[in-house]
Length: 210
Image 1 (cartoon, rainbow, N blue to C red):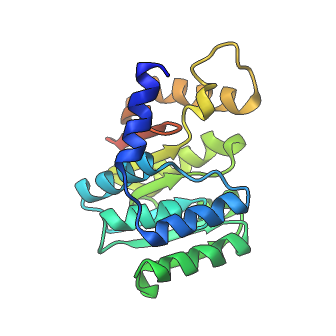
Image 2: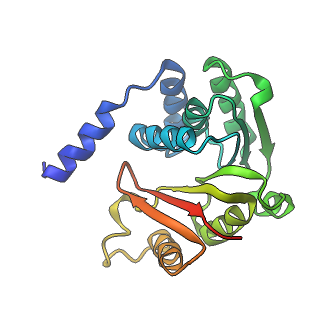
């Protein structure tokens, strides 16, 4: 195993997930959902804690893995989460309850993000996490940067897409969608950005101007 792969494995194994998170992860895998890795989850918690987050918007609820990680770093925050799959959100609601998250800190919206996001107010959230339809990435991130407050965070999961984004020979649609997003972000003066290699990649943006 290459040195970098050993380091990635060590970083993943370093994270110990609570029981509620482990159960949510298992449910995600059973449903065919690709949840964020433990190391990415830990990064979400750190970023949420460091940014004094009180309001979180999540695009892609899944079974609650990322939501639990975000709320672990922001114990006073309210999470609004959008997903088209009601069944997934029911699993997530159970996961939040098992994790001791009060029901009044969770707002689940069942619907298409493309229809819900345009109705959300500008600058209404401290942190927006994107883990949904990769084909709509650019639109989701554009909405996220409008919805997040100045100085707030936009985080995009799976930004290295199974190692394919870094390999120019990989020309599948999803890899190209992520490359297009990363190229657009690299040219933007409205954000400060960083691309973490943890897990499947985490794109981190701080909104610096309206």
